[in-house]
Image (cartoon, rainbow, N blue to C red):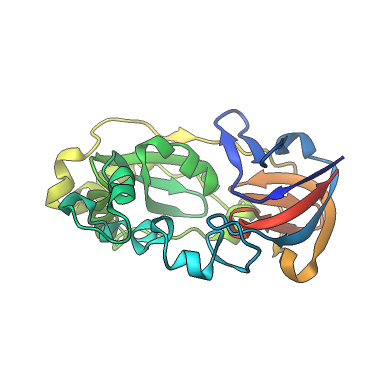
Length: 263
């Protein structure tokens, strides 16, 4: 059986274990059902997620010209402290920026390789944690806009990491942490503007991923360079497919590639 479509980040369902889906224009794959099966992935062409043209992908699934033009790739996406919609100030498209920035946001702690701080929209919990391969996570504050979440993250990352070590995450080199204690220790560093939004009482969320075998030395697949790859799927974690020969393929970083997937 063969599927063809443009890669976008896997959709997920919070279950035990997490359920993953590759969604194409006219079809979808429940990726969990491919575990312990040999699959072949073949690169066909590019398809920018914005303009749809066959142009090399620059970042985030967009070609270079789209990346530097559309609001979905503006700097405030990666650096929420740069958000300005709450000031009625446009960056690239004020209507879009208000829609995304002026909604409840969460500042959270997630443990995927080590404890890290992050920001996401309230509506993206727990999807964001799944995408990062976190096995446990907890909310710290819930604020009414992206800017407040951004300045809180900036303040907290002086005291806790804001990065995930993807190799450690995939190798499952993790230890359980008391995230409630972490939350209480970090409370004092929350900026004054966001202190009123501190979440006083909650518990951590635990996540289980569908992995049969973790890689000891994960090696990243460059599908554009190799053109095709075949291997037995033994795990899914974060946005990575994990294969028996320790090859790993990051779906998120390959958005915008049109592929054939044969089972």
